[in-house]
Image (cartoon, rainbow, N blue to C red; front, side, top):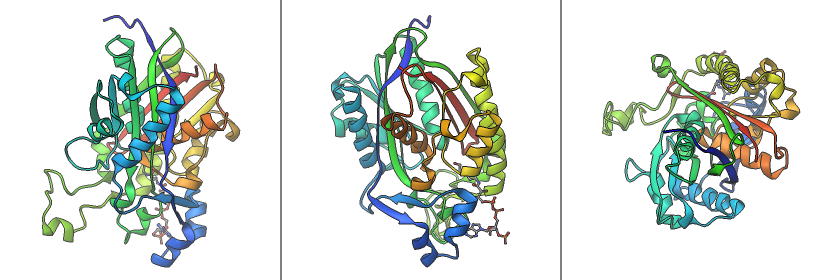
Length: 330
Ligand code: UT7
């Protein structure tokens, strides 16, 4: 099928739980310090969902905000994609729960998983449905509750993550506006550096699995760090190349918010001053698939992005996975 249409974002929304967990509070429950967390990561606080909240609750609120911002109603949606590694349950999908919550009676719905790259993957999937003419309006959400999969006894990982949700509404746009190019990649051979090993078919739920703490996230942070610094620049250059554009064409960068040192290294490689790079990890930590859409929503609301800007989204995550999208903002 010919790509007769372009796909563009007409609305963004986000939702962050109210409870703020500061570094100082972590000092009281584990052997860490505000100074270590700030200097090694840039994180000062993160949001934590209430115990009774599930990912779909956050996703639903972000979706409602995005629909309001896009001035559309739920019955106009053709498809809902939720990117998450912390779904409410194995099935039904979190996307189907959101579909019910918002009353998107005409929409198909599914979850997809590419960890912290999840939103960029989901956006690219949505883009294909729009470009071919198959669908007209798609809700794409990145939502996570990492506080429930973190090992609060592991200071190497517990200080890094947070909870939240971000959403966008993707629609048909005029040719050569909206998403100009996209690039996705993966490397399963190094996937062992960031995993949640328990609870699936490899290590099903049983007492032994829980005693071994396999139901919590495991990470080799320095290996992920090295991969991230390399891949963020590569993924950005690749998507520019695909669009026949150069570094000078980038107006604004929305990077995955994992570590300020990774973001600064990426900005340097892309020759971008930090005022053209959105950073909110100081407030929220790493919210995985929600990281990019929450940052995008905040950047839009703060008017850091204007019509006609070339906005670059770049993310990396477990899998290993990576992806980038270049968007001419409508
Ligand atoms: O979205 C993808 C998910 N993950 C990431 O993007 C994470 C990528 N990696 C990173 O951001 C960094 O590698 C970390 C922030 C995780 C770690 O920073 P680092 O500079 O690579 O530190 P390190 O792992 O080399 O650890 C240095 C030291 C170790 O102590 P020793 O062995 O040198 O005595 C750690 O035990 O820091 C210690 N450490 C801590 N100290 C205080 C590790 N975590 C903490 C902590 N508080 N929370």
